[in-house]
Image (cartoon, rainbow, N blue to C red; front, side):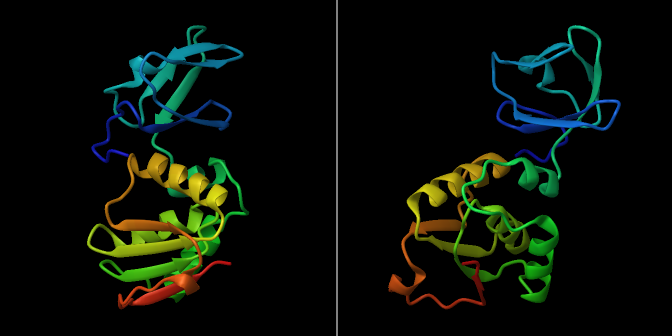
Length: 178
């Protein structure tokens, strides 16, 4: 997800209607987003700044923002039960996950906690995640890639048990989400 404040192809966008109802989708070239009161062409969203007011073909107005982490997590596809944003914040805080940390994570599930860990460690950190179930790993991989716009270079996802890891890596923190 780009952080320059302007929308581009591949970004998640959150449209909020006048009643506060939120709708989230990925901006895809050539697509349209439809509601009961008209549609919005995705290409028309490219290049506009966050906070812009956009209208459907029928004139219904929405305010456009990039989703907050909490909003993204609550609306992302799930395979396993997610770690909710308030709980992820507590885990990151209590475990003292810091920028630049090397973290090993056992149990990725749908990737909600993984996204919070990646944000906490930043680009200088390293997150090595293990998930036993390939279907959960696939969902988590897709959610992480959707949130960040691509797979972070400092994240390694392994399908298998952390117990079977023969890594000699030294870690600053261990997170068990099983």
